[in-house]
Image 1: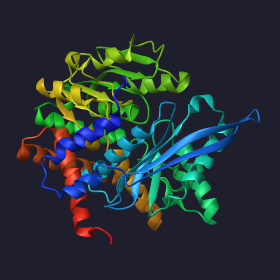
Image 2: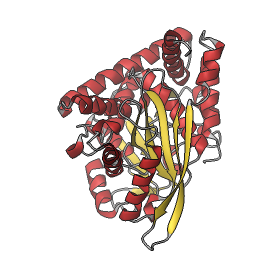
Image 3: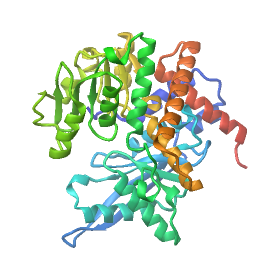
Image 4: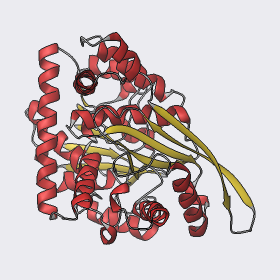
Length: 415
């Protein structure tokens, strides 16, 4: 499923969206390419005293709206084109939800599961040092992504701080609470997925209590999305991780599933559901499908078999353009990734603001601020879709691109 080049997908989406905008052609050319790209090859001392060389990237797509923001992923399949695409999508995502950031993304080609704790720390600190030429609270603020979490963000913050001689918590988000992390950050992306799903259901005159949901992915996005959806009354009939999924037509008890996962580190063997493959989960008869894993999961090959009425994109780029077209013809309501999963960067923004002012908010306040921003952004995208007669993905891209282009127009071209 990874055959599609997601940078080509990102460019295709961009080219389609700008057709609906009256933007200076020069600005269109500029927004079509990343502002800067850093590729680093760096040595890491391994536990057996050998030295391995790893390759990492950090790409800044735009700085028109403010400092760049974006996650760092550790994955063996990481490519520069993937990072370029994710950085571009981050630009539009931040603009859609009205956050003063540009888009960035980073990554290291590695399999973190094969590294010891010491090797992982060595790799993270060395990578942080290599990209620190770009990092700063006013310039570029990394965050967690696939294969990284609060532990890696703590190492990055500490490394940057050691080089500066004092603590700089605002240089990275997604940190542990003990060193300047934010309440509500861990479940923010999943919470945003659920908030936008509720808004989409309203447009279809459906209530969460009458909704059957299938969730692909049981990581930082899928797990919170599943239990928050259940808390709102939905029936979660299936969920999966990298090893496969579990299905129960009457509904899964998500807290019980989480307890099983915490013990076994896999969903495999869960006794109160039947085993299914990830591919099967996507094609289940359900009201809402939440792809919260990796990109390119729904393609032209399996799109005709998708039965969900609403797709909430918890992952970045889970649908290929061909799948998009097929599902729209079937009348599927797609909540696009740059809107649906923007809860994470929204609360990352809250964390950054709290770190800069050394004043922290409570979890209820953060969750309510997040809900208001997600609902407002959903309604704004919906309005663009209705006014311009566009699908939701194109409408979100149009809104995001328009806001970035307007900022560039006002700023002008230096010198």
